[in-house]
Image (tube, rainbow, N blue to C red):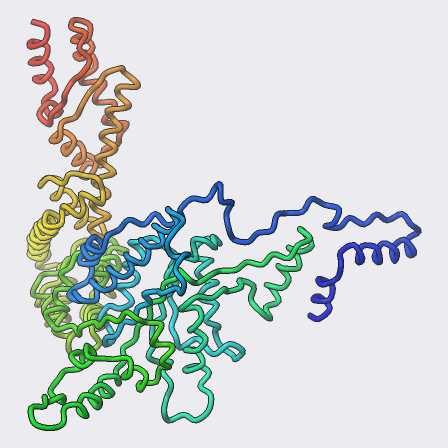
Length: 581
């Protein structure tokens, strides 16, 4: 390793001269040395673009209310947390966008202040899920890690600077884009220093100290120290360009979000409040619930919990997430985009079985999950335990539809025997069709309630018919509601493309009215119609009639309604009679 460092540090011309003299002596003076000094030099890469070509990397225009509305589609309750996260994250990235667009702002402020966020709340309430949803929505580089895998620099274990290197990988090696990313660290309460341990705590307090500079502002070298691969890459780059390339990432605009359950923090807060409330008129602290205590958390409580004051000082924004009730767990299962039910639909769909849940079944599953006392994570256990026998046996049968009712949850063995016997298959199919219709109506009403959001996001006017079509598509395919609406938008665009193609191919300017567009979308969904088939029908059914009118009247613009598509002969006869005679 020392030899490599020695070679890199020498003057290339001196190395060339010595190596040439040695080879000439050995081989008789017939050798010509080609080195980087005789080749064109590659420009040094600093991770920055030419100022003339530089464009704003962050095209961020999302407002806090818009992000909150998006989170409401996925997350039950947590109103305060959604408000805090949406507001501070939107402000952070809008500041970056404004600074990049104007060339002013952050760089002119002495002392960089970042709104790094600390999230507190019991396990299974959606801390990680919230951050993943936000990262997906805003579209910036995002990395997630558990605090427990890191150790202080110089010790065995992960280096906190690896988070920044991972961020560059997520940005497809775009350093400037990575410098506006999000780093999310979970289980942060696990690196709180333990009062019962003597000596250095390299995986606790040591990690806190290692995070101080990245959380504020520092330069992180992408070259990993003591990594042979990294050193070989640097040597190869030097041999190719004749220059040492230093790739640096500045963390000034990287937002850090940390979270943890902090299960023992409530006791620290309780002790502080008990001391303050001694005497007449004091309030009873012991009667307060854990979440009520966490809301009253102060920096001094977190320091007593085991965090260094410098570390807490770099997390100025705190949000407390609420514990979920049984009713909340039921609401999660009822949400169209909840991953628990969607995942189970996907499991059965893999065997060609369509599955649907009744409300009574969801209430029982929520009740069982609440007993687990693990928050939303208990829902997965409850659903898996209830349906495991069905998932094992039904794929071997020719059953294509499966409805999960209250009886299925309460008497799984009896219902499974009944299904396998196939004696009451028509009864179960009727139950399924009724539940499917109820579910379609529920999804359609959900889309209608949120149609303003979906319309703005997709640039599509959502009529009742289109809400129904999106609901139908959602219920027959495993996806999120937004993706179902996007599918309707895509089919809508296909219809508009047909208009363009008819004009280009036949020089006929046809315009589909709204009900005709909806009718054609239904043909795409229900009958798997193709654009080519519809184009062919347009030509066969309408070309001669439209061409006749065009020749007689020079009119070349025709409106097609749904009725015109269904009964084209009557439509053309009436149109010809009106326009020609």
